[in-house]
Amino acid sequence: MAAPDNVRLRLETVRLTALFNRFAAVQEVSVLFPAHTVSAIIGPSGCGKSTFLRCLNRMHELSQGGWVTGKVLLDEVDIYASDVNPVQLRRRIGMVFQRPTPFPTMSIYDNVAAGLRVNGPRPRREMDEAVEQALRQAALWDEVKDRLRASALALSGGQQQRLCIARAVAPQPEILLLDEPTASLDPAGTQRIEELCHELKRLYTIVIVTHNLQQAARVSDYTAFFYMGRLVEVGRTSDLFTKPRVEQTEAYITGRFG
Amino acid sequence: MTGLVALLSFTAVLALVLIVADLIAKGASSLDWNFFVRNPVPAGESGGGVANAIVGTVIIVGIAALIGLPVGIGAGLYLAEYGSGRLGFLVRFVADVLNGTPSIVVGIFAWTWMVKPVGRFSALAGSAALAILMIPMIARTTEEMVRLVPHSLREAALALGYPRWRTSLRVVTRTALGGIVTGCLVGVARIAGETAPLLFTALGNLNFSTHLGQPMQTLSLQIYVYGTGPFDEWHRLAWAAALVLMGLVLVLALAARWVTRQRYGSAR
Image 1 (cartoon, chains in turn blue, red):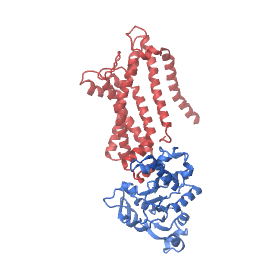
Image 2: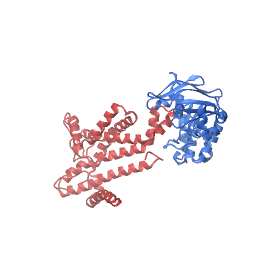
Image 3: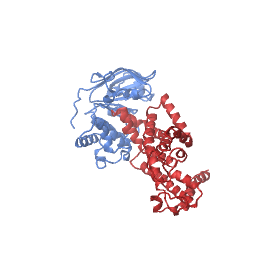
Protein backbone atom coordinates (compact mmCIF):
# COMPACT_ATOMS: atom_id res chain seq x y z
CA MET A 1 0.00 0.00 0.00
CA ALA A 2 2.27 2.74 -1.21
CA ALA A 3 1.08 6.24 -0.59
CA PRO A 4 -0.05 7.90 -3.81
CA ASP A 5 1.97 10.84 -4.90
CA ASN A 6 -0.30 13.49 -3.49
CA VAL A 7 1.77 14.74 -0.61
CA ARG A 8 1.61 18.34 -1.71
CA LEU A 9 -2.05 18.27 -2.52
CA ARG A 10 -4.34 20.40 -0.54
CA LEU A 11 -7.81 21.77 -0.68
CA GLU A 12 -8.76 25.35 -0.05
CA THR A 13 -11.89 27.45 -0.37
CA VAL A 14 -11.83 31.16 -1.07
CA ARG A 15 -14.92 33.18 -0.14
CA LEU A 16 -17.08 30.24 -1.07
CA THR A 17 -20.80 30.99 -1.07
CA ALA A 18 -23.33 28.25 -1.79
CA LEU A 19 -26.85 29.18 -2.80
CA PHE A 20 -30.20 27.56 -3.37
CA ASN A 21 -31.77 29.93 -5.86
CA ARG A 22 -31.53 33.23 -3.93
CA PHE A 23 -30.94 31.74 -0.48
CA ALA A 24 -27.31 31.56 0.63
CA ALA A 25 -26.85 28.42 2.71
CA VAL A 26 -23.10 28.99 3.02
CA GLN A 27 -21.62 32.45 3.01
CA GLU A 28 -18.11 33.59 2.22
CA VAL A 29 -16.24 30.68 3.70
CA SER A 30 -12.47 30.68 3.31
CA VAL A 31 -10.69 27.72 4.83
CA LEU A 32 -7.72 25.49 4.08
CA PHE A 33 -7.53 21.75 4.48
CA PRO A 34 -3.86 20.68 4.65
CA ALA A 35 -2.80 17.47 2.91
CA HIS A 36 -2.92 14.26 4.94
CA THR A 37 -4.98 15.65 7.75
CA VAL A 38 -8.47 14.99 8.97
CA SER A 39 -10.57 18.13 9.20
CA ALA A 40 -13.91 18.07 10.97
CA ILE A 41 -16.76 20.41 10.23
CA ILE A 42 -19.10 20.86 13.16
CA GLY A 43 -22.14 22.99 13.87
CA PRO A 44 -25.84 22.76 14.64
CA SER A 45 -28.35 21.33 12.16
CA GLY A 46 -28.98 23.61 9.22
CA CYS A 47 -25.72 25.52 9.61
CA GLY A 48 -24.71 24.69 6.04
CA LYS A 49 -21.97 22.17 6.82
CA SER A 50 -23.31 19.45 4.50
CA THR A 51 -23.96 21.97 1.76
CA PHE A 52 -20.42 23.24 2.17
CA LEU A 53 -19.05 19.71 1.86
CA ARG A 54 -21.08 19.12 -1.29
CA CYS A 55 -19.46 22.19 -2.86
CA LEU A 56 -16.06 20.55 -2.54
CA ASN A 57 -16.81 17.93 -5.21
CA ARG A 58 -19.35 19.98 -7.14
CA MET A 59 -22.31 17.91 -5.97
CA HIS A 60 -24.11 21.00 -4.71
CA GLU A 61 -24.80 22.25 -8.22
CA LEU A 62 -26.79 19.05 -8.88
CA SER A 63 -29.32 20.01 -6.22
CA GLN A 64 -32.43 21.87 -7.27
CA GLY A 65 -31.47 25.54 -7.64
CA GLY A 66 -27.92 24.95 -6.40
CA TRP A 67 -25.09 27.25 -7.47
CA VAL A 68 -21.96 28.74 -5.95
CA THR A 69 -19.73 31.80 -6.05
CA GLY A 70 -16.13 32.02 -4.88
CA LYS A 71 -13.43 29.45 -5.45
CA VAL A 72 -12.48 25.96 -4.40
CA LEU A 73 -8.82 25.33 -5.06
CA LEU A 74 -7.63 21.78 -5.39
CA ASP A 75 -3.86 21.96 -5.51
CA GLU A 76 -4.18 25.60 -6.52
CA VAL A 77 -6.51 24.95 -9.44
CA ASP A 78 -10.05 26.30 -9.15
CA ILE A 79 -12.40 23.34 -9.58
CA TYR A 80 -15.15 25.73 -10.65
CA ALA A 81 -13.08 27.05 -13.56
CA SER A 82 -14.90 26.70 -16.87
CA ASP A 83 -12.42 24.17 -18.27
CA VAL A 84 -12.89 21.73 -15.37
CA ASN A 85 -15.22 18.82 -16.13
CA PRO A 86 -17.24 18.17 -12.96
CA VAL A 87 -17.71 14.48 -13.84
CA GLN A 88 -13.94 13.96 -14.17
CA LEU A 89 -13.36 16.01 -11.04
CA ARG A 90 -15.62 13.80 -8.91
CA ARG A 91 -13.39 10.84 -9.73
CA ARG A 92 -10.57 12.61 -7.90
CA ILE A 93 -12.68 13.31 -4.82
CA GLY A 94 -14.38 10.43 -3.06
CA MET A 95 -17.54 10.93 -1.05
CA VAL A 96 -19.38 8.87 1.56
CA PHE A 97 -22.90 9.76 2.63
CA GLN A 98 -24.89 9.71 5.85
CA ARG A 99 -26.68 6.50 5.05
CA PRO A 100 -24.91 3.58 3.40
CA THR A 101 -25.67 3.62 -0.33
CA PRO A 102 -24.43 0.32 -1.77
CA PHE A 103 -25.74 -0.34 -5.27
CA PRO A 104 -28.39 -2.98 -4.58
CA THR A 105 -28.09 -4.85 -7.88
CA MET A 106 -24.35 -5.26 -7.59
CA SER A 107 -22.28 -7.74 -5.65
CA ILE A 108 -19.78 -6.65 -3.03
CA TYR A 109 -17.02 -6.93 -5.61
CA ASP A 110 -18.91 -4.98 -8.26
CA ASN A 111 -19.74 -2.23 -5.80
CA VAL A 112 -16.07 -1.63 -5.10
CA ALA A 113 -15.20 -1.98 -8.78
CA ALA A 114 -17.93 0.47 -9.84
CA GLY A 115 -15.77 3.54 -9.42
CA LEU A 116 -12.88 1.90 -11.27
CA ARG A 117 -14.94 0.73 -14.22
CA VAL A 118 -16.10 4.25 -14.93
CA ASN A 119 -12.57 4.99 -16.12
CA GLY A 120 -12.78 2.25 -18.73
CA PRO A 121 -12.10 -1.49 -18.71
CA ARG A 122 -9.08 -2.91 -16.92
CA PRO A 123 -7.42 -6.30 -16.95
CA ARG A 124 -9.08 -8.76 -14.61
CA ARG A 125 -6.06 -9.21 -12.34
CA GLU A 126 -5.46 -5.52 -11.94
CA MET A 127 -9.11 -5.10 -11.01
CA ASP A 128 -8.97 -7.91 -8.46
CA GLU A 129 -5.95 -6.33 -6.83
CA ALA A 130 -7.51 -2.87 -6.73
CA VAL A 131 -10.70 -4.25 -5.18
CA GLU A 132 -8.77 -6.18 -2.55
CA GLN A 133 -6.66 -3.17 -1.71
CA ALA A 134 -9.70 -0.92 -1.35
CA LEU A 135 -11.47 -3.44 0.85
CA ARG A 136 -8.36 -3.77 2.99
CA GLN A 137 -8.14 -0.01 3.35
CA ALA A 138 -11.75 0.03 4.50
CA ALA A 139 -10.97 -2.78 6.98
CA LEU A 140 -13.62 -4.95 5.38
CA TRP A 141 -11.51 -7.47 3.47
CA ASP A 142 -11.36 -10.15 6.16
CA GLU A 143 -15.11 -10.09 6.63
CA VAL A 144 -16.08 -10.37 2.96
CA LYS A 145 -13.18 -12.05 1.16
CA ASP A 146 -15.06 -15.36 0.95
CA ARG A 147 -18.26 -13.88 -0.40
CA LEU A 148 -17.22 -11.17 -2.83
CA ARG A 149 -19.95 -12.28 -5.22
CA ALA A 150 -22.70 -11.99 -2.62
CA SER A 151 -25.16 -9.13 -2.66
CA ALA A 152 -23.97 -5.95 -1.00
CA LEU A 153 -27.33 -5.86 0.79
CA ALA A 154 -26.38 -8.99 2.74
CA LEU A 155 -23.96 -6.88 4.80
CA SER A 156 -24.82 -5.14 8.07
CA GLY A 157 -25.26 -1.38 8.17
CA GLY A 158 -21.75 -0.80 9.47
CA GLN A 159 -20.27 -3.14 6.88
CA GLN A 160 -22.26 -1.44 4.14
CA GLN A 161 -20.84 1.91 5.19
CA ARG A 162 -17.31 0.53 5.10
CA LEU A 163 -18.14 -0.92 1.68
CA CYS A 164 -19.07 2.58 0.59
CA ILE A 165 -15.73 3.81 1.91
CA ALA A 166 -13.99 1.05 -0.06
CA ARG A 167 -15.95 2.09 -3.14
CA ALA A 168 -14.94 5.71 -2.62
CA VAL A 169 -11.22 4.97 -2.13
CA ALA A 170 -10.90 2.31 -4.86
CA PRO A 171 -10.21 4.87 -7.63
CA GLN A 172 -7.52 6.35 -5.35
CA PRO A 173 -9.00 9.80 -4.99
CA GLU A 174 -6.98 12.67 -3.63
CA ILE A 175 -9.61 13.88 -1.19
CA LEU A 176 -12.14 11.91 0.83
CA LEU A 177 -15.33 13.68 1.91
CA LEU A 178 -17.38 12.06 4.67
CA ASP A 179 -20.86 13.44 5.31
CA GLU A 180 -21.85 12.29 8.80
CA PRO A 181 -20.69 8.78 7.94
CA THR A 182 -21.64 7.31 11.30
CA ALA A 183 -25.07 8.91 11.67
CA SER A 184 -26.90 5.65 11.08
CA LEU A 185 -24.43 3.29 12.75
CA ASP A 186 -24.23 1.67 16.17
CA PRO A 187 -21.30 2.45 18.52
CA ALA A 188 -19.19 -0.47 17.29
CA GLY A 189 -19.68 0.54 13.68
CA THR A 190 -18.91 4.12 14.57
CA GLN A 191 -15.67 3.13 16.24
CA ARG A 192 -14.54 1.19 13.17
CA ILE A 193 -15.13 4.18 10.92
CA GLU A 194 -13.27 6.50 13.29
CA GLU A 195 -10.28 4.18 13.39
CA LEU A 196 -10.38 4.17 9.61
CA CYS A 197 -10.12 7.93 9.51
CA HIS A 198 -6.84 7.72 11.38
CA GLU A 199 -5.43 5.12 9.02
CA LEU A 200 -6.69 6.64 5.79
CA LYS A 201 -5.25 10.06 6.37
CA ARG A 202 -1.85 8.65 5.47
CA LEU A 203 -3.23 8.24 1.96
CA TYR A 204 -5.89 10.88 1.59
CA THR A 205 -6.89 14.30 2.78
CA ILE A 206 -10.10 13.83 4.71
CA VAL A 207 -12.91 16.25 5.42
CA ILE A 208 -15.61 14.93 7.73
CA VAL A 209 -18.91 16.54 8.62
CA THR A 210 -20.18 15.43 12.00
CA HIS A 211 -22.92 16.14 14.48
CA ASN A 212 -20.95 14.53 17.19
CA LEU A 213 -18.47 16.75 18.99
CA GLN A 214 -16.68 13.87 20.67
CA GLN A 215 -16.21 12.35 17.26
CA ALA A 216 -14.70 15.55 15.93
CA ALA A 217 -12.38 15.68 18.93
CA ARG A 218 -11.37 12.03 18.47
CA VAL A 219 -10.71 11.88 14.73
CA SER A 220 -9.71 15.29 13.50
CA ASP A 221 -6.55 17.36 13.36
CA TYR A 222 -8.39 20.54 12.47
CA THR A 223 -11.93 21.60 13.27
CA ALA A 224 -14.11 24.23 11.64
CA PHE A 225 -17.21 25.49 13.44
CA PHE A 226 -20.09 26.62 11.23
CA TYR A 227 -23.07 28.61 12.37
CA MET A 228 -25.89 30.05 10.25
CA GLY A 229 -23.99 29.44 7.04
CA ARG A 230 -20.84 31.18 8.19
CA LEU A 231 -17.48 29.91 9.33
CA VAL A 232 -17.21 31.06 12.93
CA GLU A 233 -13.87 29.61 13.88
CA VAL A 234 -11.30 27.18 12.55
CA GLY A 235 -8.15 25.87 14.16
CA ARG A 236 -6.30 22.89 15.50
CA THR A 237 -8.82 20.57 17.09
CA SER A 238 -6.92 20.56 20.37
CA ASP A 239 -6.95 24.36 20.50
CA LEU A 240 -10.52 24.81 19.39
CA PHE A 241 -11.88 22.44 21.99
CA THR A 242 -9.76 23.64 24.88
CA LYS A 243 -9.44 27.36 24.32
CA PRO A 244 -11.84 28.60 21.66
CA ARG A 245 -11.29 32.20 20.63
CA VAL A 246 -14.90 33.01 19.84
CA GLU A 247 -17.67 33.13 22.42
CA GLN A 248 -20.13 31.30 20.12
CA THR A 249 -17.76 28.38 19.66
CA GLU A 250 -17.34 28.01 23.36
CA ALA A 251 -21.09 28.11 23.88
CA TYR A 252 -21.57 25.40 21.28
CA ILE A 253 -18.87 23.00 22.42
CA THR A 254 -19.90 23.32 26.03
CA GLY A 255 -23.43 22.45 25.03
CA ARG A 256 -25.08 25.75 25.83
CA PHE A 257 -26.77 25.94 22.44
CA GLY A 258 -27.18 24.00 19.22
CA MET B 1 -63.33 -4.73 9.66
CA THR B 2 -60.79 -7.49 9.17
CA GLY B 3 -63.65 -9.84 8.35
CA LEU B 4 -64.99 -7.45 5.73
CA VAL B 5 -61.62 -7.05 4.08
CA ALA B 6 -61.11 -10.79 4.13
CA LEU B 7 -64.52 -11.29 2.52
CA LEU B 8 -63.76 -8.77 -0.21
CA SER B 9 -60.39 -10.27 -1.03
CA PHE B 10 -62.01 -13.71 -1.02
CA THR B 11 -64.52 -12.44 -3.58
CA ALA B 12 -61.73 -11.11 -5.77
CA VAL B 13 -59.89 -14.41 -5.68
CA LEU B 14 -63.13 -16.35 -6.11
CA ALA B 15 -63.77 -14.71 -9.49
CA LEU B 16 -60.43 -15.93 -10.81
CA VAL B 17 -60.91 -19.39 -9.33
CA LEU B 18 -64.39 -19.71 -10.86
CA ILE B 19 -63.19 -18.58 -14.27
CA VAL B 20 -60.27 -20.97 -14.29
CA ALA B 21 -62.42 -23.83 -12.96
CA ASP B 22 -65.07 -23.19 -15.58
CA LEU B 23 -62.48 -23.07 -18.36
CA ILE B 24 -60.93 -26.30 -17.21
CA ALA B 25 -64.29 -28.04 -16.83
CA LYS B 26 -65.45 -27.09 -20.30
CA GLY B 27 -62.21 -26.81 -22.20
CA ALA B 28 -59.75 -29.32 -20.82
CA SER B 29 -61.43 -32.34 -22.41
CA SER B 30 -60.86 -30.87 -25.87
CA LEU B 31 -57.17 -30.31 -25.36
CA ASP B 32 -55.25 -32.96 -27.20
CA TRP B 33 -52.28 -33.07 -29.50
CA ASN B 34 -54.43 -32.34 -32.54
CA PHE B 35 -55.76 -29.20 -30.94
CA PHE B 36 -52.31 -27.70 -30.89
CA VAL B 37 -50.92 -28.92 -34.21
CA ARG B 38 -53.89 -28.96 -36.59
CA ASN B 39 -55.68 -26.15 -38.33
CA PRO B 40 -59.42 -25.63 -38.25
CA VAL B 41 -61.49 -27.98 -40.39
CA PRO B 42 -64.57 -26.90 -42.36
CA ALA B 43 -67.71 -26.34 -40.33
CA GLY B 44 -69.63 -29.50 -39.64
CA GLU B 45 -66.61 -31.76 -39.60
CA SER B 46 -65.33 -32.76 -36.21
CA GLY B 47 -61.72 -32.58 -35.05
CA GLY B 48 -59.33 -29.90 -36.11
CA GLY B 49 -57.31 -27.52 -33.94
CA VAL B 50 -56.20 -23.97 -33.57
CA ALA B 51 -52.55 -24.17 -34.57
CA ASN B 52 -53.04 -21.17 -36.85
CA ALA B 53 -54.43 -19.09 -33.97
CA ILE B 54 -51.64 -20.01 -31.58
CA VAL B 55 -48.96 -19.16 -34.13
CA GLY B 56 -50.86 -16.02 -35.09
CA THR B 57 -51.09 -14.86 -31.48
CA VAL B 58 -47.38 -15.34 -31.00
CA ILE B 59 -46.56 -13.43 -34.19
CA ILE B 60 -48.96 -10.53 -33.70
CA VAL B 61 -48.25 -10.09 -29.99
CA GLY B 62 -44.53 -10.59 -30.61
CA ILE B 63 -44.35 -7.84 -33.20
CA ALA B 64 -46.51 -5.57 -31.03
CA ALA B 65 -44.06 -6.12 -28.17
CA LEU B 66 -41.12 -5.50 -30.49
CA ILE B 67 -42.56 -2.08 -31.34
CA GLY B 68 -44.22 -1.27 -28.04
CA LEU B 69 -41.61 -2.27 -25.47
CA PRO B 70 -38.68 -0.13 -26.67
CA VAL B 71 -40.90 2.90 -27.24
CA GLY B 72 -42.73 2.42 -23.95
CA ILE B 73 -39.59 1.85 -21.89
CA GLY B 74 -37.84 4.75 -23.59
CA ALA B 75 -40.75 7.06 -22.89
CA GLY B 76 -40.90 5.86 -19.27
CA LEU B 77 -37.19 6.52 -18.74
CA TYR B 78 -37.57 9.95 -20.27
CA LEU B 79 -40.49 10.76 -17.99
CA ALA B 80 -38.67 9.59 -14.88
CA GLU B 81 -35.32 11.22 -15.64
CA TYR B 82 -36.15 14.37 -17.55
CA GLY B 83 -39.91 14.61 -17.35
CA SER B 84 -40.23 17.45 -14.87
CA GLY B 85 -40.79 20.17 -17.47
CA ARG B 86 -43.77 21.06 -19.60
CA LEU B 87 -43.01 18.43 -22.25
CA GLY B 88 -42.87 15.76 -19.56
CA PHE B 89 -46.22 16.87 -18.24
CA LEU B 90 -47.68 16.73 -21.75
CA VAL B 91 -46.29 13.26 -22.46
CA ARG B 92 -47.59 11.99 -19.13
CA PHE B 93 -51.03 13.45 -19.77
CA VAL B 94 -51.24 11.97 -23.26
CA ALA B 95 -50.11 8.59 -21.94
CA ASP B 96 -52.81 8.64 -19.27
CA VAL B 97 -55.50 9.56 -21.77
CA LEU B 98 -54.29 6.87 -24.16
CA ASN B 99 -54.29 4.41 -21.27
CA GLY B 100 -57.96 5.08 -20.73
CA THR B 101 -58.92 4.95 -24.39
CA PRO B 102 -61.21 2.01 -25.20
CA SER B 103 -59.28 -0.54 -27.19
CA ILE B 104 -61.91 -0.65 -29.92
CA VAL B 105 -61.21 3.01 -30.64
CA VAL B 106 -57.56 2.19 -31.13
CA GLY B 107 -58.69 -0.59 -33.47
CA ILE B 108 -60.71 1.84 -35.57
CA PHE B 109 -57.75 4.20 -35.61
CA ALA B 110 -55.45 1.48 -36.91
CA TRP B 111 -58.08 0.48 -39.46
CA THR B 112 -58.28 4.07 -40.74
CA TRP B 113 -54.55 4.40 -41.20
CA MET B 114 -53.31 0.93 -42.00
CA VAL B 115 -56.21 -1.08 -43.41
CA LYS B 116 -58.31 1.34 -45.41
CA PRO B 117 -55.47 2.90 -47.46
CA VAL B 118 -54.06 -0.52 -48.37
CA GLY B 119 -57.42 -2.05 -48.96
CA ARG B 120 -56.92 -5.21 -46.96
CA PHE B 121 -56.75 -6.41 -43.39
CA SER B 122 -53.32 -7.35 -42.13
CA ALA B 123 -51.54 -8.86 -39.17
CA LEU B 124 -49.20 -5.89 -39.13
CA ALA B 125 -52.07 -3.47 -38.58
CA GLY B 126 -53.14 -5.68 -35.67
CA SER B 127 -49.67 -5.52 -34.16
CA ALA B 128 -49.63 -1.75 -34.56
CA ALA B 129 -52.96 -1.42 -32.76
CA LEU B 130 -51.75 -3.61 -29.90
CA ALA B 131 -48.48 -1.69 -29.71
CA ILE B 132 -50.40 1.57 -29.35
CA LEU B 133 -52.35 0.05 -26.47
CA MET B 134 -49.19 -1.17 -24.86
CA ILE B 135 -46.97 1.90 -25.05
CA PRO B 136 -48.69 4.13 -22.45
CA MET B 137 -49.04 1.20 -20.08
CA ILE B 138 -45.34 0.31 -20.29
CA ALA B 139 -44.27 3.96 -20.16
CA ARG B 140 -46.15 4.67 -16.95
CA THR B 141 -45.04 1.48 -15.19
CA THR B 142 -41.43 2.08 -16.19
CA GLU B 143 -41.62 5.63 -14.88
CA GLU B 144 -43.08 4.47 -11.56
CA MET B 145 -40.42 1.81 -11.14
CA VAL B 146 -37.54 4.17 -11.91
CA ARG B 147 -38.96 6.74 -9.51
CA LEU B 148 -38.95 4.14 -6.74
CA VAL B 149 -35.15 4.05 -6.83
CA PRO B 150 -33.91 6.17 -3.92
CA HIS B 151 -32.31 9.49 -4.78
CA SER B 152 -29.32 8.62 -2.60
CA LEU B 153 -28.27 5.88 -5.04
CA ARG B 154 -28.23 8.35 -7.90
CA GLU B 155 -26.12 10.73 -5.82
CA ALA B 156 -23.72 7.97 -4.85
CA ALA B 157 -23.14 7.14 -8.51
CA LEU B 158 -22.71 10.78 -9.49
CA ALA B 159 -20.24 11.30 -6.63
CA LEU B 160 -18.18 8.41 -8.03
CA GLY B 161 -17.80 10.34 -11.24
CA TYR B 162 -20.49 8.60 -13.26
CA PRO B 163 -21.82 10.75 -16.08
CA ARG B 164 -25.54 11.36 -15.81
CA TRP B 165 -26.57 8.97 -18.62
CA ARG B 166 -24.45 6.23 -17.15
CA THR B 167 -25.95 6.79 -13.72
CA SER B 168 -29.38 6.43 -15.29
CA LEU B 169 -28.52 3.21 -17.08
CA ARG B 170 -26.03 1.40 -14.85
CA VAL B 171 -27.42 2.23 -11.46
CA VAL B 172 -30.95 3.62 -11.55
CA THR B 173 -32.44 1.57 -14.38
CA ARG B 174 -30.62 -1.54 -13.30
CA THR B 175 -32.01 -1.21 -9.81
CA ALA B 176 -35.49 -0.78 -11.26
CA LEU B 177 -35.03 -3.53 -13.83
CA GLY B 178 -37.03 -6.18 -11.99
CA GLY B 179 -40.01 -3.88 -11.79
CA ILE B 180 -39.67 -2.78 -15.41
CA VAL B 181 -39.53 -6.35 -16.69
CA THR B 182 -42.57 -7.24 -14.59
CA GLY B 183 -44.42 -4.29 -16.06
CA CYS B 184 -43.48 -5.42 -19.58
CA LEU B 185 -44.66 -8.97 -19.00
CA VAL B 186 -47.92 -7.79 -17.50
CA GLY B 187 -48.34 -5.42 -20.46
CA VAL B 188 -47.75 -8.23 -22.95
CA ALA B 189 -50.21 -10.44 -21.08
CA ARG B 190 -52.77 -7.64 -21.20
CA ILE B 191 -52.62 -7.21 -24.97
CA ALA B 192 -52.42 -10.94 -25.66
CA GLY B 193 -56.09 -11.18 -24.76
CA GLU B 194 -57.27 -8.13 -26.73
CA THR B 195 -59.97 -8.86 -29.29
CA ALA B 196 -61.70 -5.63 -30.26
CA PRO B 197 -58.77 -3.86 -31.96
CA LEU B 198 -57.94 -7.03 -33.90
CA LEU B 199 -61.44 -7.29 -35.38
CA PHE B 200 -60.70 -4.20 -37.44
CA THR B 201 -57.13 -5.04 -38.30
CA ALA B 202 -55.93 -8.64 -38.25
CA LEU B 203 -59.52 -9.73 -38.88
CA GLY B 204 -58.94 -13.45 -38.39
CA ASN B 205 -58.22 -16.27 -40.77
CA LEU B 206 -59.48 -19.82 -40.78
CA ASN B 207 -56.37 -20.98 -42.57
CA PHE B 208 -52.79 -21.12 -41.44
CA SER B 209 -50.99 -17.92 -42.43
CA THR B 210 -47.76 -16.27 -41.43
CA HIS B 211 -48.00 -13.50 -44.00
CA LEU B 212 -47.84 -10.19 -42.17
CA GLY B 213 -49.65 -8.35 -44.92
CA GLN B 214 -52.60 -10.73 -44.82
CA PRO B 215 -55.35 -11.39 -42.29
CA MET B 216 -54.14 -13.61 -39.47
CA GLN B 217 -55.88 -15.59 -36.78
CA THR B 218 -55.32 -15.13 -33.06
CA LEU B 219 -56.70 -17.06 -30.10
CA SER B 220 -58.90 -14.19 -29.01
CA LEU B 221 -60.42 -13.85 -32.50
CA GLN B 222 -60.86 -17.60 -32.67
CA ILE B 223 -62.76 -17.55 -29.40
CA TYR B 224 -64.92 -14.73 -30.67
CA VAL B 225 -65.81 -16.46 -33.94
CA TYR B 226 -66.24 -19.95 -32.50
CA GLY B 227 -68.02 -18.77 -29.38
CA THR B 228 -70.64 -16.86 -31.33
CA GLY B 229 -70.98 -19.56 -33.99
CA PRO B 230 -73.86 -22.01 -34.29
CA PHE B 231 -72.05 -25.34 -33.90
CA ASP B 232 -71.47 -27.30 -30.71
CA GLU B 233 -68.12 -28.39 -32.07
CA TRP B 234 -67.09 -24.74 -32.36
CA HIS B 235 -68.22 -23.98 -28.83
CA ARG B 236 -66.11 -26.85 -27.60
CA LEU B 237 -63.05 -25.50 -29.41
CA ALA B 238 -63.75 -21.96 -28.17
CA TRP B 239 -63.64 -23.17 -24.57
CA ALA B 240 -60.39 -24.97 -25.21
CA ALA B 241 -58.90 -21.94 -26.93
CA ALA B 242 -59.96 -19.78 -23.99
CA LEU B 243 -58.22 -22.16 -21.65
CA VAL B 244 -55.03 -22.01 -23.72
CA LEU B 245 -55.14 -18.22 -23.81
CA MET B 246 -55.70 -18.07 -20.07
CA GLY B 247 -52.80 -20.45 -19.58
CA LEU B 248 -50.58 -18.25 -21.75
CA VAL B 249 -51.43 -15.16 -19.70
CA LEU B 250 -50.88 -17.11 -16.48
CA VAL B 251 -47.45 -18.24 -17.66
CA LEU B 252 -46.51 -14.63 -18.42
CA ALA B 253 -47.72 -13.51 -15.00
CA LEU B 254 -45.74 -16.28 -13.32
CA ALA B 255 -42.69 -15.34 -15.36
CA ALA B 256 -43.14 -11.78 -14.10
CA ARG B 257 -43.14 -13.01 -10.51
CA TRP B 258 -40.14 -15.18 -11.16
CA VAL B 259 -38.15 -12.36 -12.72
CA THR B 260 -38.75 -10.09 -9.74
CA ARG B 261 -37.39 -12.73 -7.42
CA GLN B 262 -34.28 -13.18 -9.50
CA ARG B 263 -31.25 -11.03 -8.80
CA TYR B 264 -30.82 -9.74 -5.34
CA GLY B 265 -32.70 -6.69 -4.29
CA SER B 266 -34.25 -5.42 -7.46
CA ALA B 267 -36.68 -2.62 -6.70
CA ARG B 268 -39.35 -4.90 -5.23
